Length: 164
Image (cartoon, rainbow, N blue to C red; front, side, top):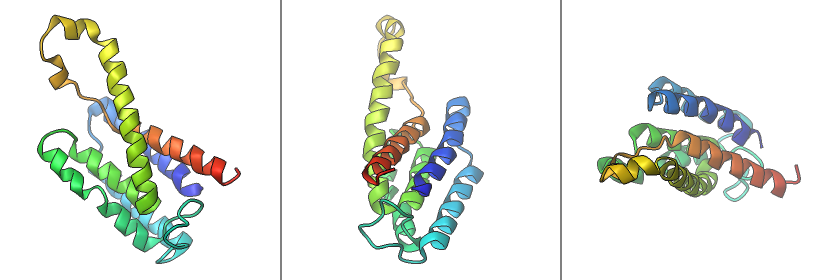
């Protein structure tokens, strides 16, 4: 349970960076990757507790490395400017902390959170949208807060499932 909590603290700082400057610094990404790998290795060794027991412990070094590779197909979305490079790197950090299965679950939850943020943003800016055509094309939403919400929901879900 400690991994999602540490990741949530990490993403809270990344969210502030993303909201303020629309960028997450590479040194912060590197810090997240290194700390995730180090904690995974120290807590669970190379292989962790097994491929299906990622809920209560850290995923282990090997599964953290596999979790880092999960967002690589999203480079397709980066090419079309649908997602930023920093967002992909943050997804790699999430994969590093949670492993393959935890990361996939957080990615899906984060997509729903980002969609909700987009709907709220459109509702709040409806006057601007009605006044100018094609404003939605330039609507950009920072994804780090959506990822933080996804990790918070994931941590709450595994906390409830684990009896905490």
